[in-house]
Image (cartoon, rainbow, N blue to C red):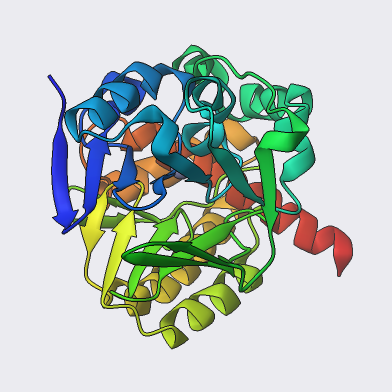
Length: 296
Ligand SMILES: [Zn+2]
């Protein structure tokens, strides 16, 4: 059963059942000339994505672009495999992420370290041939008939993060730059290895200046643009929480456990596997704090 919703005329959102759970991760499908995907999901999403294209009567030959917000495997892990099935498509990626999709060995090793026992849920990663990858600079524009996509440099969650702004309808594909929006709750996403608070806050100001009419989260679905003004405070409070709890505990595992316990007590953890996301975000924040101390 496909879970496919129209979020805007010509734009469908497919639940890819990320990590085997509904409502966690998805891929947007834009019907246009050419058609396009925003995100590829992991390799485990491939069958579902191809079935969704069939369902929407989009020929595999008509898909021109796969817009990848960043190279983390829940967004780009399946891109190599998908490009095999979509002969005219090219993957669009930030300049700082490209080499890790051409040769994913370091990326895969880094994800393995970050997600630990959840690694099998991230599928397999096929390298993308050079000619099938398109590096987008900030401001690059992609006309798709009824839509016009602009790449927006959006570092913070990761240095290789782009958001995509659909200029005609003012829709902002946020990737993970505005966090996760799970079950109506905005959740910080500050995963290892290279979350950066200041870069995130600067990105959020730039995204706000675009004046989007709607946010389209990868995790998970449409949200009000008002969330853009909530996320900076949420991020700051989250980083402060980790900083404070860190002082009282010796090991990383103890700190993460204490952060989750406190977050649970305050009811800021939404349902399901978001607990694992939040544990990763605690680790990413610790790495950020550690790096801050080393550079100051
Ligand atoms: Zn993600």
